[in-house]
Image 1 (cartoon, rainbow, N blue to C red):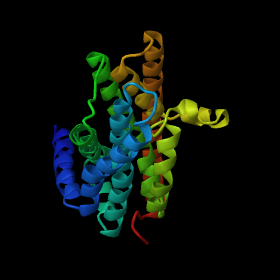
Image 2 (spheres, helix red, strand yellow):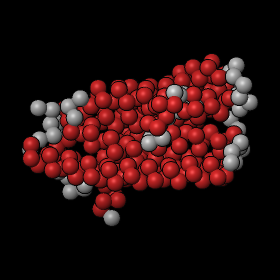
Image 3 (spheres, rainbow, N blue to C red):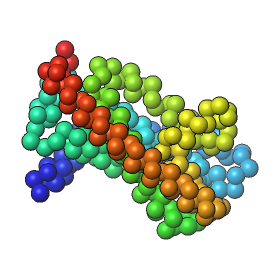
Length: 260
């Protein structure tokens, strides 16, 4: 019960602190608008009947990834340079649980990008976002959120022990956009690089969201994508748990998580 209360309290406090920063507000509010405009210009003359779905999902999911990637790395950097990273690491609540609460908070706020993108396309371009299969779309949405949290937890320990978290963060954003099909379908990528796309769970999450919203899908393909998404997410959890234990061991050996 104590851990659960601390988890919820961390989410609330973190959301308040994050939204008080101008950079984070830009990522959550203005970035989906910018991406929506860019994606609309890209897709408006395409042959896709439901190209608005590509625009909304593309801009919304890229915003979600940016929010998680930038904020999660930035949160650890801020804790480090404020001298509080060691404090939360030594708190009675597991360090992994505190980081999970921060990731969940960032995910909740990042999901607002889908709403903002939908509203922007509707108001300025009179585009309608259709959902052909609502139950499957909701399931895909929940699995997407779960997969993003899992992959975020896997990379969080890297940010924790690295002194170049911001550099890593900047190097991870755009490649994920491309590799996972957020900007354009993975089928447009060269054959030699596609295997890398298929070991990343967001690839299947994005495709699931698109297919279930448009409605043109084969149920067997959907089941396979759901299975792959769940398997990859579970693997990320196992790896994350191992890496957090590794961080704990390295911290005890070196005796610091601080800036020096």
